[in-house]
Image (cartoon, rainbow, N blue to C red; front, side, top):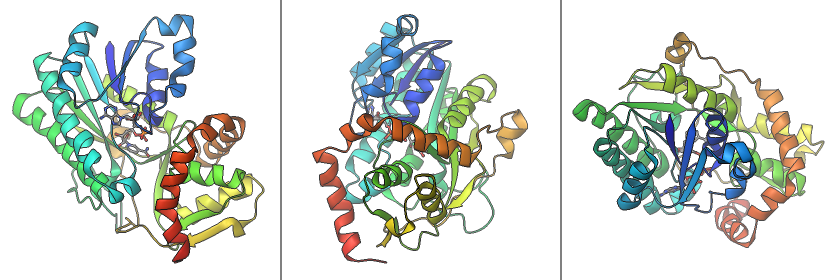
Length: 340
Ligand SMILES: NC(=O)c1ccc[n+]([C@@H]2O[C@H](COP(=O)([O-])OP(=O)(O)OC[C@H]3O[C@@H](n4cnc5c(N)ncnc54)[C@H](O)[C@@H]3O)[C@@H](O)[C@H]2O)c1
């Protein structure tokens, strides 16, 4: 396979590139937004054997000319589209780049896939397209009910990909994973923010009462599932990918503090996120029946992740720069002032 991994310099995309380059030719296209980081791919680029099977392009998935050029120059037969604006909080502040990348960008990739007759297109969607799970767990056939600009734009990309299967029989598969955690996740996201703030002895801003439930999956389990789906999934199908670890955010925060031997008074309940989904839960029977199971225990995986952030302070300190601090102030100053 020659795989185009879009968004491959981000959190999940870089793990996926590292996994696939051992067996396939990998081409990464990434805009290197604030969330993209070439450091995440450093080990591949510096490895004599792996770098021979690896190419990197800096650019936008919305740029049709560039996408066409990569498709023909690199002879791409498979696309896995991770490229996206991904932070719900940022989508609430300003949605425009989310509409561009998460919808228009998907359109550009789908059109190029038709022109170049690719063999497989995996659209990485998210469990957030279902909205809040009031009870039970969502199946792939449940209706989509996204409740913020991020999840709504991801739902747009998800359904557009499906339309290209229905209309043109483009070989599409859609995956909807639950919340990922693991090394290399940008420190503005919940788990790395809480780990790095705790290491820096800063407050941990917990939204609302902290009783939002999230199903956590280790990023390596998620990547293994996508790899498995490329080999075993059916075109035109949707697959949920969950870790089976439903946790209240407050309990995850307390676990992080206990591993780092910090006091729970570091948690500060702040004004909740607008339209915050209370609970996500996935029914993954379809993928499990096909033969995939998550392997990584949540507590062990989270302990290892905490250790990784302790060992890689320079990686996240570079990201927690002045621009990050500006974003943090915009996002949290008023929330700290107006506690839950
Ligand atoms: N992180 C999660 O918990 C989670 C869960 C389910 C699904 N997903 C989906 O997985 C994918 C990857 O998520 P992540 O957490 O790794 O995100 P991330 O924010 O860490 O990485 C996104 C990457 O996409 C790149 N990018 C953004 N806009 C681009 C554009 N227009 N053209 C090219 N590259 C662009 C960024 O530079 C970055 O490298 C996303 O599609 C997301 O919706 C994430």
